Length: 516
Ligand code: XMP
Image (cartoon, rainbow, N blue to C red; front, side, top):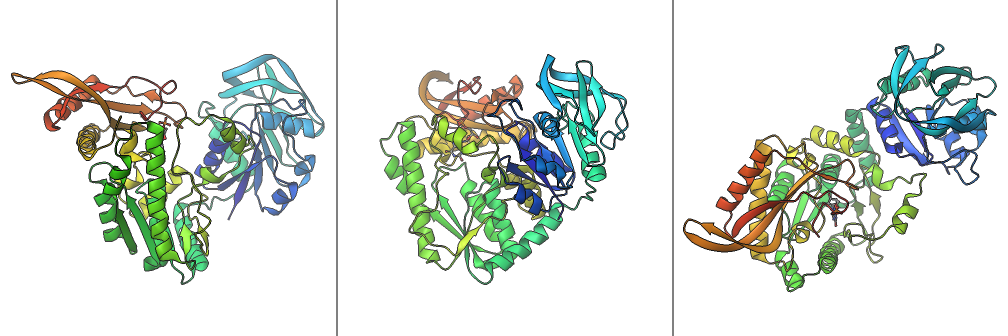
């Protein structure tokens, strides 16, 4: 399989670059810039891309790399910081630019290049830099410039070293994708063999080889990743697979039944549904503090889950997980340092390891090389229903973080009914895929109303709907008033116990997406 290495110098677009490469049907792998040179030499890469980064090459603390990487005979494309780094490593000069460039800038080609074949003489690119290459290294030629950046692209054609000061991976660079394609196909000589059908066939074969005739156990949450992992494993080993689905009773309306029906009817596997709503309600009785609720739900979930697993595994089974590529890459920025350094805003209960007393033959991660959109593509090809493949993110603690105050069976039922109306209206109006996430919240507030000739004193339900790229920040969605009006009317009319509906118009930050 053809592979491209994305060497990460801490730029914000490292994952985007890998995705762009894969969109050209070539497998891309991301490694931190601390990866040893031998790893690159032996990795069998058709090309290497140096990402951007926030630093200056002259700052001793900024990430550098062994200059020998430029002599391995593997084509290299340096982007932004990666461009400056290549110039610096090859003996050129980098200085602070008299004029920093940020945003859309006109690029002019100044010489023929394989990289810019099919790109017009003048086009818009996305720039974001304060340093620039002020003298190109010996053996390099400048192939493009902007008004304030005399070397916007340079290359040493013979050694197959290319560099661009702008960001070809972002869509604002109108011909950026063409340049990436040129690098991959013309410079690196790739043919594009990374397609989802091959992925499924190869993965099924690899899973069979790894698992042999042993049992394999997967925790199924009904989320996209674990559902697709279940589909792949079922295709590979059929009834050797046992999926354990712990239903804490805090799913959306009818969701538990839907998950069960999907996997028992469409796929060959053993499906175990552990219904423990009452246990969760019992443990949550009287608890109102959000963090305490999360903790209780998380602990109860894992204790039920691992008890169930232990009773089935007994050390002679594999354990499968729906881990996907972004979950497991180490980035140049030092993801772990960043996470450890940031404050804990909310406890995410689904980030726990395997307990020490649970033994397995090994861990199986069939989606470990895929991005989310690729996982969805595989899911669709495996015939997993759209409701699961396109499911929006759903928090591990479920409706537990959407009911303010004590959680009771009655409140869960009210919230499920209100939320079902919202989902129905969003689907009916074609809004489902336009929003990143939408749901109802049981606010715990009560309000006075009038229905017929009667005064009412009932519950206030809030609608939360957001758009976001990464959930680190989010904007509240501008759903048309008419649709909101229809949702509000229907909830008040169809859900007993609700007489008022409000719309949450707070972005993240300062709010979070969930209310608890
Ligand atoms: P917040 O509320 O932190 O949510 O702005 C950001 C995204 O994360 C989801 N979320 C969770 N997902 N376990 C999860 O798997 C959790 O404990 C959890 N808490 C929040 C939330 O739904 C949103 O998509």
